[in-house]
Image (cartoon, rainbow, N blue to C red):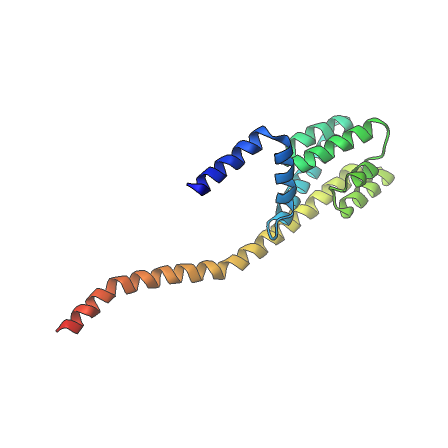
Length: 176
């Protein structure tokens, strides 16, 4: 009952409290083993969406506003809101991303190079490709980590069933 009540309470707090959602998402990105995968997923999605929007001719401030909705994480929603405000007053994108401290330096540098060379869309696409590859590598690493654990659990369950089936037969043989 306590577990069900806790899950319900967390879901309710996520729906009703923006501050709780922000803190929850902030901690979610820093969870051991899964946090980097969540962050890579968000960054890959965001950079790909931003590149597509800019290449379609959407103004960068409007693109950032749309991306804030697609991030799916309150930490990055807040960061993109700040980036949008900075862009509105004439700040460069790479500086606005760096000020938030929510984005890795690699992404900030890639955006900076893209802005200076006039190939922002290509650099965003390269960043998205990089983060997608990193995400695939991390998922593969985690799954290879869990394979032996799953095999041990399944082996233990099957062994338990075999013992449970044959133990009564062996006990009957001991009575004779």
